[in-house]
Every structure is written in structure tokens, then in C-alpha cells.
Amino acid sequence: MTKEEEILEKLKEVKDPEFGHSIIERKLIDEVKVEGDTAKILFHLTVPFCPDVFALFIGREIKKKAKEVEGIKKVEIAVQKHAKADKLNEILSKEE
Image (tube, rainbow, N blue to C red; front, side, top):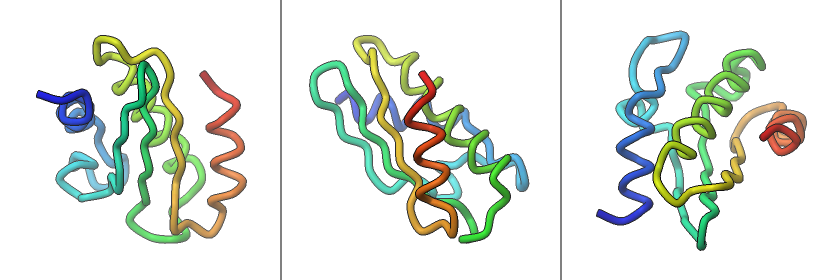
């Protein structure tokens, strides 16, 4: 199993707080790339105006679960197709 596949497996545990379904089941992950010990993950939300609190929760959970994969030390994450993507990505990029 590749590191990307391992990360996708872990992300099945992340639930969309509004609907209670896995973000994998909801097809919210757009891309997972691993370069060395860094995972780069792109995701989107169910709607472009998803409340910030839900967007940040999902982003933080993605980071947490991806870091549980052996060998992953850093996670770079970005939300796309959201009305406040720039603001959300700035917040998420500053957090460990």
C-alpha cells in the first residue's frame, strides 16, 4: 500500500460534521501526494459557503489523521472551491 493509499484509509475516519458521513464517502478529497515525509492534501467542502467552523474542523481532522500514518511528519493542506478559501487556507497553514 502506498503512503497516499494509507492516508486515504485514515481519512475514512474523518466525518463531515453536518452529515455524519466520511469525507471519503462524500468524495471531498481531491488529491493526496506524498513527497518524503510531507503529505500534500487538497479538499473541498459540500458547498462553497460551508460555515468556517466546519471547514476548519475538517481541515484540522485531515491533518491529524494524515500525521497518524507512519513516516508522515508534515501535512500541507488546502481547501478549494470555497468562498473563503484564501482565509481558511491561511489559518490552516499556520497551524501544526
